[in-house]
Amino acid sequence: MSVNFKPLADRVLVEPMAAETKTASGIIIPDTAKEKPQEGTVVAVGAGKKDESMTVKVGDKVLYGKYSGTELKLDGKDYLIVRESDLLGILE
Image (cartoon, rainbow, N blue to C red; front, side, top):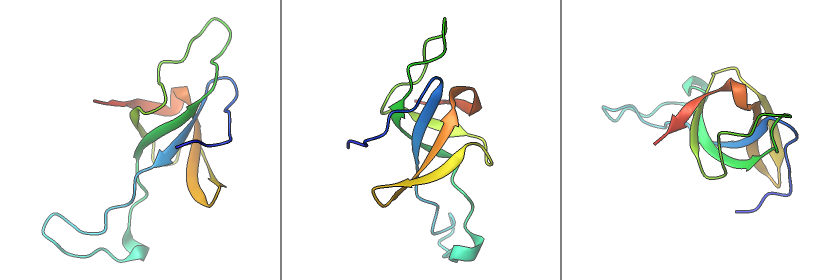
């Protein structure tokens, strides 16, 4: 997947995972009750700050804070742009 967007400095473009539609027991969750996803896939990475290289790379699955970053829409898809320091970790 290619996105025509290059984050600046220590920013990362993340594609959030889809929100859960069912509970573990099979109950369907209505749209109004769905929680905002807190994990996603890195789509683009900035060059980093002076004297600091980036830890994450394109394709990494990451966790981020519930209210982190700025939501934006590119080519009809929803993305989140966050600073690398707002990422909580990489899922392996």
